[in-house]
Image 1 (cartoon, rainbow, N blue to C red):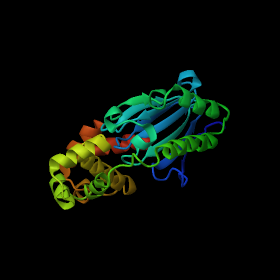
Image 2: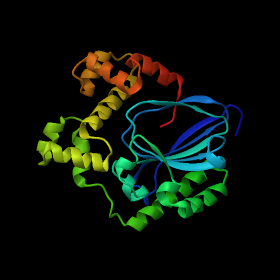
Image 3: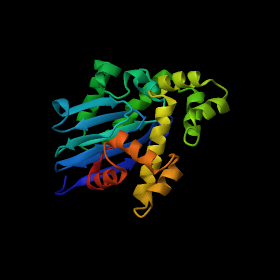
Length: 260
């Protein structure tokens, strides 16, 4: 890596994994930086090379989060991250959402030692991060081929997730013809959080995106457009997710490296 390199790029997932992988990222660092992990409901599969990884190379699944995580990214670290579609974790990782939400699980504990070791051997043969992303993508494709789509998320979950961006849990349950109790149960099983928590994350991301794209936007307008009751509601939610006011977190975000 060249002096001063901080390289993060997005790779479009190939057709063989597009049903399960929403995005692929590669990241390379040659100096220590502070990193931020934005709370998300999706599961991430992460491969790490460098001093922070066990034996210099490891991989883990990271469940959905509801609080900002702050960490130090060390010089020499390279990572490949696959963000999975909602509900796709079981087809790729073989476990229910409850086994992952809010936690970090070593790949060996999900795929088994032998399968994980074969992946590590392939990854260990390359020092090119983009090639490592292709190797991880191939391993995910093999998992999907093995399950044959039998563990695809219920259509109900995906329909509800789309509707929750603009409606209450009660309204969404009525629209899709199920009880709130049934919606909560299915959502927790396939996403890892309840529909109310998911809707909170949707609003948070919507507000954060609007504030990041227009630094002159008024928070009261952002709150209304994002679906909050008022500005006070937005502030309370930002404190719950980040520990800071909206303006304070936006400043931290601009001064810190985004992890995912």
